Length: 170
Length: 432
Image (tube, rainbow over all chains, first blue to last red; front, side, top):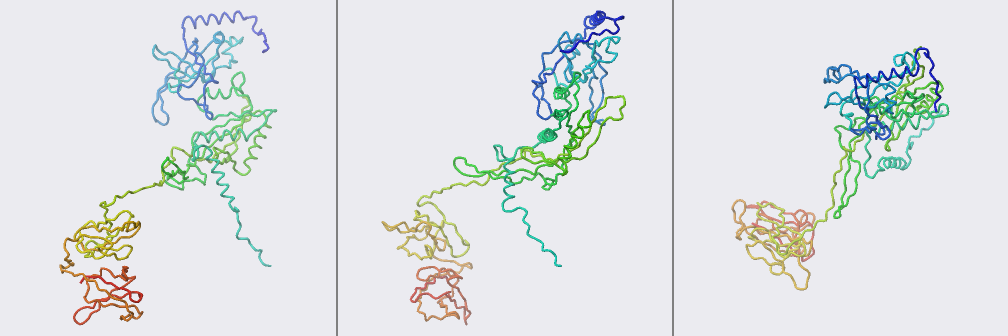
């Protein structure tokens, strides 16, 4: 068992209770007021059959744990209008998606978001767009992710869009 | 001082040593259930490189083997993580040290001299003959394959570590294996050479503020080749067939004619099958000159029957005796075709057939070699047969004909090419 070291810094200004109530208020806004919902597809890296050389799988062969709905603050960049090489074949796809999710929320759900997992974002009633995690934001040592330097309270997760041929939640 | 003697007949491979080795190599690549080699494609070559690095570059650091990421990492992010998580820390980063293999995605046409483009157009080359049996006939399949396509695949093998000693150990291991420039990996029985191109250091030494680690990249080129079993061809070779023919007695069998139809004299030959008694020439026989069996003259109404102006010759069988002519006997019928006994020559002249008989007495006129010469009573137009004791002779072998000019015409002679027995019967049949 890991040793637990009590955090006593800033104790004259903030305590664990203050920390918790701030998160609670934030969650009330995020979960209750704006209520952005996403679906996390955690890849089962043991059950997914991969080939011996490239660790690749075919269409719809990615095995994942039961999808879990979670809340996060969503920011999606502008779509890119680009071409593959020197004007060769245009493509237009959504920009990267950046999520801010409370660490406590993930802990309550009992899940972790890892590099390579897939996230579904229901763009409309009929269209869910899938993204893959390119930065799982596990390293939260910076000041931004710490509440006034007391303790980390959220993760910033960066995702890139994937085409249906790669993953479509099936 | 004389020069030392040089040995000029050095035997590099003694006896069948090379043959055995070649067979051993062939057995190795065809050890699967078919007679053909397995495909060797990009995946196999990559796997061969992974296996080679895993098995050859075994280096220990702090008592533990430096782990090798045992996959060619691709753009699939979770796949990368899935192969690293065993060696990852709490942040999901790889623990140092580790070795990773990166394949450059582009694969160039190869420089392996043994399989360079020497045979154009994907020409199929003979590989093996495989016997077949379909329950009825025995045959063989011919297996052909095109020349393998040479490919050069570049790999970067990178070691990332925290200790200089680990770099040294890894470098020693690599250089030991590539002291002779190249090393080999075995892919499905094929020896594939790998060449060390360069060693490059990518250590971020200038990064004063960042994390410090060592990183060295070894660039290798695999001189491989592609063998695709989709390009193999299997074709049936010539099969042995047991063919039987059945002939009915008195059938309409027509002997093949081996002479000019336009000539006055027709000659039909057939090989008897031991069953057939009636032979047909397929056309009306106006004048029947001779019937020969194996060159022996047959006598009408004794050996055979023939109705005038019909096409058939029927051999007379003696009860209790084997069928005549016997199987394999050569039957020859010499005749003038038509429904008349008037023989017309090329110029419309009516020709007569005559047979002159001589008894060889030894007193005949001879040529310089002593061969007897017979003078015909008529100036002949065409010789039908020359027989000695009933056996037909061939022109140029048994006899020659001469036509000598005299006062009011020509004198036709037949010269035998050899001396027959005394009292031999010499018969010359001809048209005049």
